[in-house]
Length: 619
Image (cartoon, rainbow, N blue to C red; front, side):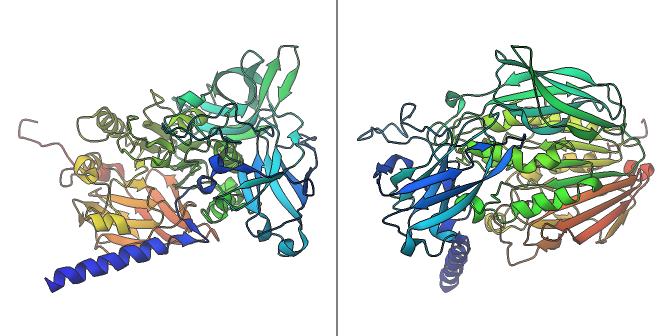
C-alpha cells in the first residue's frame, strides 16, 4: 500500500512540475495568446485627454507587402495594464457579432472581433506609467484591409477602450501576395497558390511564367475562399473570424526537369489593366529516379512569430523565427520542404494564416512547400476528425485545406503521395482514421507498394502525430510510446514495403530510433547502415518552433539520440545507394545528429522478418 501511495505522490509532483514548467510570463504554453483577450467584456471609456496616432498613413507605396508603423500615444491615466491592439479592418463594430454560445448575452458587445496582434505599452516604454507618453513600433503585412491601433486599459481580462488611432492602409490592399509552391499530381507539374483581394467578378487571375530568359506564357488560375459559416465552432465562427480573401491556384505543366523558371502572379481587371506581383523563380523537379544531388528539409510544429515583439506569440513560439530564418539563410542548399503539421497554430484566429504565409514566403515561393494536417489544423468535435479534441479552434481543417495546395485526390482527405527524384513520400493524415480496413490505410498501402525502388530507392513515410516511437513524457505516461494503435496498425506495412525512414511531428523535440520492428532494435549500428532493410528508422522532428516537450526520464533501449531543442532535419540523396541524414539546430544551423545509409537495390529486395511475401516450392 505504501508503495502505491508513493507512486501516486511521485506521479502527482511530476505532472505538477511539468505543468508549471510550461508557464511563461502568465501564459500556459500551448494556449493561443489572442484567446486571453476578453473581447465580449470590452467596455467603452474614451478620454478626450488621451491621444494615439499611427504613421505613416500610406503603406507599400513602392510595392512593399510589409511595413513598420510607428504608434505614438499620450494617456492622462497610464497603468501597467495598458495595451495596444491592432485591428483590421480599422472600422470594427458589433454588426456581424455571432453569439459565443447558446447562452444569451446581457448586451451586444462593443467589439466582436479579436485584434490581429497586441502589445503591452510598458514592455517597450519603461517610463510610461510615470510620463503617460509612449512610442511603439508594429510590423504590419498587407492583409486586404486597413488598420487601426486601439489603446485599452484594464489588462486583457477587463479591457476598457480608451482611444482609437487614425487608420493606415496599403496602397493596393488587394494585391496578389504570399505565393506558395507545391508539387503537382505529376512530377513535371508545379502548383502556384497565392492570396489576393480580387474575386473572379473583379479580375481574372493567372500566372505568367517561363524558362529563365525564355518565352513567357500564361496559365489560368482557379479561385476559392471560405466563409464564416464554413467554420465548425468558436472562436473561428465568432471573435476569431476574419475574411480570408481569395485563394488562387495555377498549375504550371510540362516542365523540363531541373530547369530554372521565372514566374509572377497577375490579375486582369475589368477595365483591361493588370495588377502584378513581384517576380519569383523556382527550379523544377528532377525526373523520377534521376541520379543527382537531391536535398529535402522536414520539420513539424513551426507556428508563426512576430518580429516586432508583439505579445501575441513572443512567449509561445520562441523558436519559430530561428527555424524560419535559418532555413531562409540556407535556401540555396535544399530543394523541397515538408512541413508535417501544425502550421500557424491559429487555433481559430483566422488573421494568423496571412501572417504565417508571409513568414514562410521566402521559402514557399522558391521551393515546393509541402504540408500535412495536424491537430491544430483539423481537430474539432463531431466534425469527422479521428480525434474529438478542440485544437483547431473551430477551423476543422477548412483554412488549411484552402490556403495550401497538396496533391490529394480529395481536399478534405489530407493524405497524398509525392515524388521528388530518388525520393518517394507517403504523407499520412493522422487526424483521419488510419487503422487497418479504412480508406486511408488502403491508400497508404498502395502508396508504399507502388514505388519502383530501382528508380526511387528512398521510401519515406511521414505524418503529424507519432504513429511509431517517441519517449515523450505523455506518451510514456500512457505506456504506449506513440499514438495508441499506431504501430499495431501500420508497422507491418512499414516492414513489408521496407520503409527507410518514418518522420513525425506533434511532439516538440527531436528523437531518433535505431532501425526497429516490433519494439526491438534490429540493427546495432548507430551512425551507418547498410545491407538488407530489416527495420525502419523513426524520427520525431516536432521542434520547429512551438513550446518544447519533455522527455521521460527513462531512456528506452531503441532511442539513439534525443534533443530538447528547436531544429529540423535534412536528407541528402547523393545517388541511388547513398543517403545522408542530418539533424540541425535552428539557433546555429549546425549538425548535432547524423547517420548515413549505403545500400544497393539487391539489399532492398533482401528478405527480413515480415519483409517478404511467403514463398513455396511452387513459386
